Length: 367
Image 1 (cartoon, helix red, strand yellow):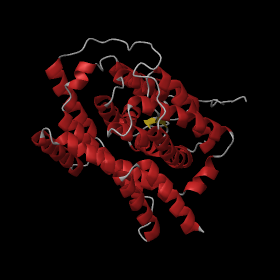
Image 2 (image 1 turned 90 degrees about the horizontal axis):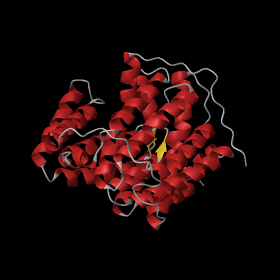
Image 3 (image 1 turned 90 degrees about the vertical axis):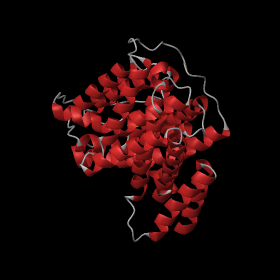
Image 4 (image 1 turned 45 degrees about the vertical axis):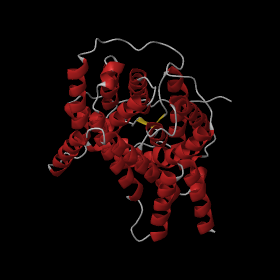
């Protein structure tokens, strides 16, 4: 079967201060998650950053707009908390990529969204948020004083109106501390290798994570992002087309040492809110990621304060949890209960079981 990809005829590029700040709007949740993933698994941060850099540029130029490229949060979150090893994460990402490519090619994205139900997808988001919060507490216990100071700084910046930028400030402080402890690394290119951090491993946990992630990806990264492309940038981009590009991204990046990636409505909205209006933001961010990859050594990562990493995960967890409940009206008690129920089951049992049970309950309630 042939897969055709149409490139936009006109790609507007602008390199300005607003495009640069817009690029940072997409990195607010990306960088903390990547640093946390690299600190808790065998993944190579340098290879991951190169993957993000390349595909920021590729999809920005292809779609002709500042489209977001983010980690698949359910899978990456499960890896951070230890539910998935990197080989299992890689396998889950390849499976998800293959499904997204096929589903998008046959125009099935909308059908799958209707079958699963938005409250179930939001519940998976909430479950990942709870798991990240649990991991954040564990990381912070090693140096509670540093964690409290980091949280105080985040709260202060939020009160001053810099809530979204606060994680970048904490990340920068952690980076400075790591450089002071480990020294300035000599820039070097990541080695070219097939699956440099470990070959994919299929397991029950990987399959469960894949199913849960696909629900989130179809709802948030495909359908919601397609709507935002029209609302914010007046671009007609179909959810099926986004599904195809996400599939291509996963299938190409993971063998080279990357992680599962997707587009995301949150990242797209963040770019717009911070001033990005053209694909120039993607080019700037892509170059920035690749530049960071040159100095992302294991020694530097090992010197990063784990308590500050816990602070970063707290902020990411809160944002992810808030995003899970925001779209649901307060009057829709049934949907709110389903989101909360799926989240709690995901925390206590696992996300795969929570997703399946939630889908069954949603189907029964819809009858």
